[in-house]
Length: 472
Ligand SMILES: CC(=O)N[C@H]1[C@@H](OP(=O)(O)OP(=O)(O)OC[C@H]2O[C@@H](n3ccc(=O)[nH]c3=O)[C@H](O)[C@@H]2O)O[C@H](CO)[C@@H](O)[C@@H]1O[C@H](C)C(=O)N[C@@H](C)C(=O)N[C@H](CCC(=O)O)C(=O)O
Ligand SMILES: Nc1ncnc2c1ncn2[C@@H]1O[C@H](COP(=O)(O)OP(=O)(O)OP(=O)(O)O)[C@@H](O)[C@H]1O
Ligand SMILES: N[C@H](CCC[C@H](N)C(=O)O)C(=O)O
Ligand SMILES: [Mg+2]
Image (cartoon, rainbow, N blue to C red; front, side, top):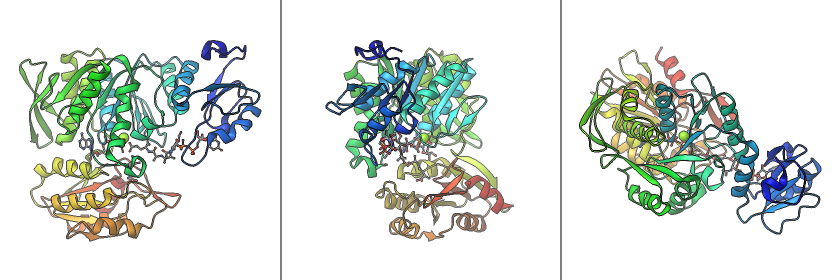
């Protein structure tokens, strides 16, 4: 694309590629120079130009000798818009999901519901890029903007028409996943996480609201879970922006959750669509939190042209999401072991609540907290686990650069009666050893993860696999 057509700059240069990392600039690239947490991308502008960058998106006043400056007070945002025009076309229908918990589950369920309705669909998020045939990891929930746009363009080339993606608060704050027209945005819930990055709950919430305020298309739709204390505030943002609104939940108007009753292998939901007659749905997934995510996913499908009848049938056929209340094994004593990605206080509460109706004896929970991440959530996690669990085993979960003993101590200080077992494999072994028939073991925090991050090394570790080994 001509630079003139792209940015109204008087130049015949062609923009043939985009980059935010000077080491990946090729001749003809548009370079995005941003201030980051570790580096200032503006420092690499001369090298980027030397490598052939024809234009640079940066803050006003930045020197760009030998290339065109596209100046913007919010260079990341401008770069996303321009890069998207260079990298288009994208799948025709994209939707995005934000919220503290439930994003991965919701995008994955949306992908499945679309597929069952006959669309070629994909999801992008913590699990990577997922299609019916393939799953490729990106390492982050919201990858960088160039990876995001190239994934979207690649999916279009594969013939994918519908994509649901996770919009993490970091990603929204850093304009990492936008530029693609977003037909619908969803909100799942809001609770404590990531205060290491956002500092306050209000600025964390504000980062999430960028999805509604700026990212979703002006003529788009918002799908809002109604049963969260912040749902009303989200709806205010939706109204201010003039979006169409679909609400789902106990107070939902589009899909009302009339009742939710656990069953041995899942749960029975009574639903009412747009005030119509009540319908019973046998959902093959356990846990109220999974029901919530299913309804948000259904809302996204309805928002993008799905019919209620097809969506309703699809919900009854959903397959479980990897690492979300995944039943890994049954111990020799007869206790099922579930693996779940709960790594916030609210998620631990939701995961325990999901399993509690199925527990006849004790609920045994094994968990830790990640290093180099929100420190303040650690005591809250300990408190909620010891309040709601019967046996609590505190262990390691990705200590990263921190001293694992100190992380455990911060959890233990608030986890009355908890046992500390540093090594995660040993902790899982201990849980399996003490579990009796009628008990349930919950391994929380790592879900689908396949590594334990210690320092800068990633040691192979998969909760489900380790549980199977220890139970053998
Ligand atoms: C704090 C944070 O979020 N950092 C992310 C951010 O980095 P940054 O923009 O601050 O980058 P930086 O390294 O300081 O560099 C600044 C700029 O200089 C450029 N540069 C840098 C070096 C160089 O030699 N040349 C060069 O051009 C960089 O490409 C960058 O554009 O943007 C990068 C991608 O564009 C991310 O890889 C990086 O994630 C780091 C590694 C990270 O660990 N992030 C985690 C906390 C994260 O984002 N997690 C959320 C979790 C959300 C959830 O729970 O759902 C996620 O979305 O995954
Ligand atoms: N709707 C929900 N309400 C409360 N807790 C939930 C909900 N959905 C998921 N959880 C909890 O959060 C965990 C992570 O779920 P999921 O991976 O879908 O969330 P996420 O928002 O993608 O997380 P991340 O921010 O790490 O990407 C689950 O394993 C469960 O314990
Ligand atoms: N087991 C993990 C979960 C991390 C979830 C991730 N989305 C984040 O907080 O960055 C950890 O704490 O390392
Ligand atoms: Mg996720």
